[in-house]
Image: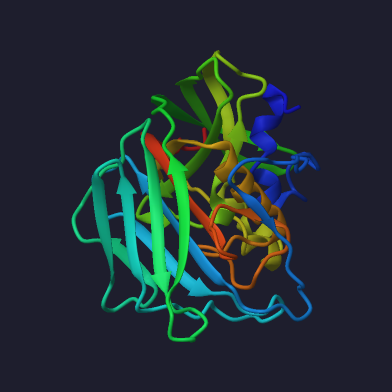
Length: 310
């Protein structure tokens, strides 16, 4: 079980665990049932598989799906992008066609802006001749959009942990009495941290049904302390400075997507938008032997400014 005080250490361990409290060897991977399946891949000499990753949000925007092919597990290469696919998303009687962005192979975008609706289920269909046999293979997925959870505000405070100065981001929101799973994404000034490795994921085990009253959700090291960290650690860290403008997004996600993000963060660095080589034992909701994930979620956001040091 995760306790209230341990939420603040969840994402810290992904980025710089050797420096913050030495916490966290938890997040046991439980058996998951339902429409997802676990992909076991021979990482020594694995056959490439299609990788499909994308999301539907309640923001009125062009929704996107990324399609690529996995590389060998030990190949430090970017996934080859897959062009020429037929991609559509359906919800009820609504059908949204996605077309490939002309200057970005493998990126498919809705032809018009659209916003997902909480409570709706979205079905993805991808048709492409992946194995080059002259016949299109079909890959499908289904994503349910949970209710929108209002993020009332965030508050940024300074905190000294050992010899390091941090900015703690504290969250204020009302949790529902149901079993909930959350993902936080953030933007600092003009920098958008939209990689799986930077997402903050947590559940509501210790706050179920309560008002989340200033929960420390992430700690960002002060940029003035950057020289105290090794070059390897710095690669996976996000620094903050006085007067930085910060936007946080609270996304109410399904258990399946939560587990997918969690496993990607444990397994590898969570590359953007997905991973470089095929990961072993990562759950997916893509059919027909594909890997990746199709998710839907509603977003609530809040902003604050990093305080100066007294």
